[in-house]
Image 1 (cartoon, rainbow, N blue to C red):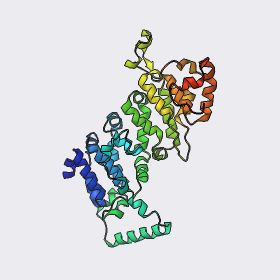
Image 2: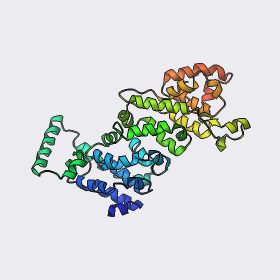
Image 3: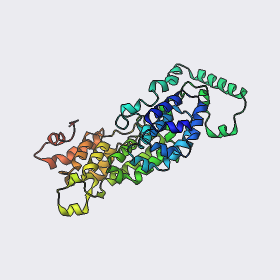
Image 4: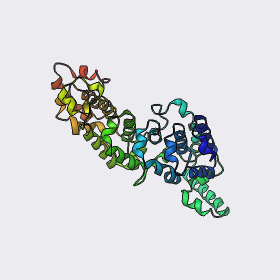
Amino acid sequence: KITGRMMHTLDGARAVNTLMAAASAKQRKKVLKSLKDLVLKIALDQSGRLVILGLMDVVDDTVLMKKIVISELCSDLYGLASDKHARVCLLHLLNPRCPRYLPPALVETLPPLDQLQVADSSTAGESQKDKEEKSKAEKGKQGKKGEKSKGDEDDGDGVEEEGASGGGPKKPLTVKRRELLSGKDGLGKKLVDMCFEHSAEMLCDHVKADVLAEVMSGGVECEMAEAVGCEEMQRLYEAVAEAATVRVPKTKECEGEEEEEEKEGTSILTDYTGSRVLRRLALLPAPKSPEGVACFASVLWAKVFKGNCSKWLNTHAEKVLAAILESEDEKTAKAIRVEITKLLKPVSIVEWQIKYTKVKNV
């Protein structure tokens, strides 16, 4: 109860995160259970959200985290993605501690990374045989202590019992993030479904676009792409590429064009905000997943620009086309050069591209 009251101030959130990092597994479990049915409210709180991020870092029992924290976050994913502060609870699993979303002053309220990696470095030199023997010894000790209570048996995967005496988390951060995102109806799948359903709206809003971009990036260590699979990522890429041609009301930056077009609206590609977001997405590298996923730039080229470049020149869509030219897909970049070189004459492709981006492989 005291923890619940503390986390609604910045200093209180810092204190809770410090306590959770030093707590035993059983103590963390008690705190987690006390947050049941309150997670969404805490995530929407400007200071409380930092405690959610801390829990994602220090709690090794991902089964319990999914049951209490992730399940509540999934109940209103689009609402969280639309909130400037709450969206960090989603972004932390995709691009943790990124200064673009969380200022350094707030990152300092989270458990230090070196404290979270102590367990990893301490077991780095152990052989597989040593680890197995250590695991058997731990299980033997637990058996002598007697049976656990029925409530405790149902609530976790047993991983945290290794850290029952405190001393920090034992599971690598990348593994925890992957486990929190995975599952047939897990957070990763639901994030893809949410982005698929609301792709047009997310492309036109910078706050929501950050979530869309991080989902499409596949995660900083490819956790997202591995959790949902190649087919789901490809499905999302195609949906976003199709949404790029959806017509939306004109923004103020696009005023001054013909009245007839203004009444009808403009496509996201030619919208000021939408084109900037699409440019960012086109520059994303393909997730380095074992299954292999094509980069978004090649999908966007094939579905929207190929054979229609003349339609998009001299509009905001030019910056998106220039970004595709700068992408890592050399085959697509070559196809663009062939198609637009004759359309740009007498201007060279170098002179045209340099207006929007750094010249690369031209």
